Amino acid sequence: MGINNRPLSQQAFERARGVIPGGINSPVRALRSVGTTPLFIKQANRAYIEDIDGNTLIDFCMSWGVFILGHNNPAVSRRAIEAIGRGSSYGIPSEAETVLAERVREAFPSMERLRFVNSGTEATMSAIRVARGYTGRDTLVKFEGNYHGHADHLLVSAGSAVANISTASSAGVPDDFTKHTVCLPYNNVEALEQYFRNHGDTTAAVILEPVACNMGVVVPTIDFLKATRRLTAQYGAILIFDEVITGFRLAFGGAQQRFGIKPDMTTVGKIVGGGFPAAAFGGRADIMAMLAPDGPVYQAGTLSGNPVAMAAGIETLHQLTFPRFYEKLEERSNRFITELQDIIRGKDIQLNHCGSMFTLFFNEHPVRNFADARRSSQERFARYFKKMLERGIYVSPSQFEGNFISECHNDDILKYVLKSIKESIV
Image 1 (cartoon, rainbow, N blue to C red):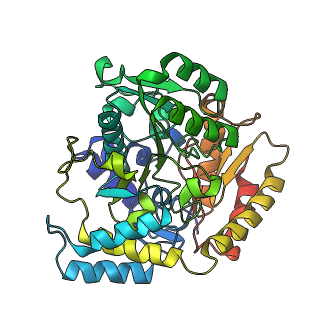
Image 2 (image 1 turned 90 degrees about the horizontal axis):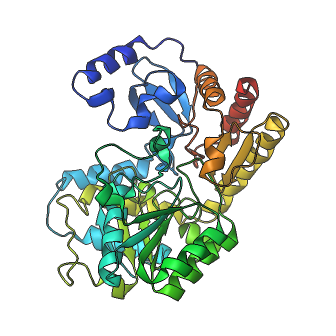
């Protein structure tokens, strides 16, 4: 393994920059925050990716959490290929959409009705529109460091790659688009209670990542989650859990199953499409009845419910119901986490984790919210990232992202990763 020499990726990057802004189609892929240039991938299989220079790496990004079964799962790929053989898109309903919707509802009973879209951004944007239509109110509450996609009204103190922008927002977003978005500190019950005492009657919805993943992994307190449920119910606001990452990751029924909190609406993505562009938003039947053609809230999409993505999603969710799937994944993850805690002890590094997700924060203080996360040393993280790359390991390339353990990260792989981390942290 090793990746010191990648001239073909450099050439590919220069070519891409001539036609694609920044040479990449999503900002964090540029690897600027870690002081290097992108890898261009040729293929992926199980826990590994291979770039066009022939370097093979253990992948801990896993397409940002998509591949809980590992890359190129044989049965998922086979179902997708079979679906392509029947036509790659119809723009007309297929039964596969209903089958996958039923599977999602089995996992998330709170999603009594749901609709498929193509991305997490589209799912959260649509859920918020429905919540506003249902309540007749405008104000949305989100939390610092939570990233819900790049819709204009959501780019307020957001996480993910936006965390590297000095204003933690975006140019090109008029103030009028964000004036109805209120941003509160994550994990702060007192701030949430004070806000609702003053503005609860005008609040349409509260949206949050029930386990934050886009400022790095930050686990909520159970009191904080319970407060979001109690206060939204008390004031007639809609509670939206953005489970685009945590859905099917922390349990078959996501964070809401893990923590025992039932939201009014939920968004899921990533895993649900089995590696193809798919996401969904849903919730109580009375709320979802607001959607056209039954109700006055409009939402549409040419490729929504794409038959290839539906086929891949059906097979993925089927495999997630195999006996003890989550128990075995979490047992292996916990062994890894326990050994990793020993390695970083006394080195001014915080290890945040939940289930099969984790982040190393290069920070001498605990990380419980976005302000804590931003005090982490991006310089130390960049050195760590490049040292891991040299050892043939691709961790998520930002201090403000999570890493993901899949079914294919076996004990031998994890043992090598632990050894490499020990050699790479400075």
